[in-house]
Length: 186
Image (tube, rainbow, N blue to C red; front, side, top):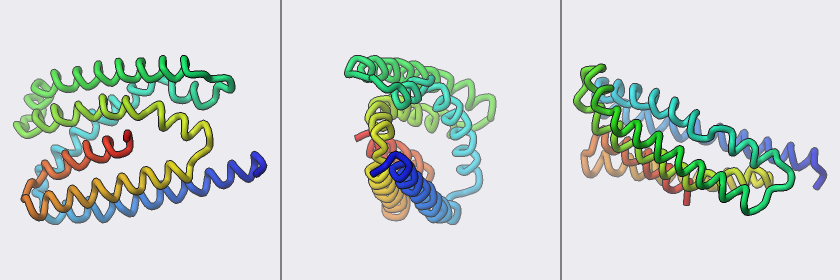
């Protein structure tokens, strides 16, 4: 397969991934919008802002450098893994310890435990990030598609199951988010 054909193929798989992810999330959050109070969605929205900010800082450009650098070796991947793990631990710890002041600022008692649990997402994400970069570098977008769609389907189904049968409410969303990151990292 030529480089152009490989790039087009990768683009198609990536587009399918994004579209299917959006569809699954629409159904998933649509279900939770019907069963959760609006205040719980406010807590999730606030938590997602902090998660998004920290996620931007987690990569710190190492993933892009691994993908675009031509002559990478095991040492490069080891450094990226350790660096991402340290950054993930730092940001996760920071979010964990700032959860109380943030929850006081927003006057939400529920926000503190939500942020503390979601802080573990950074460590889990850091563990699987180098594998993700390696798949991207090798243009294995079909494999990434299957990994991400399967992880999304399983974690969404688990979240809906937990909400429906165990009546976990907002915690079903939180645990489902952690489960999604864990599945993608594995």
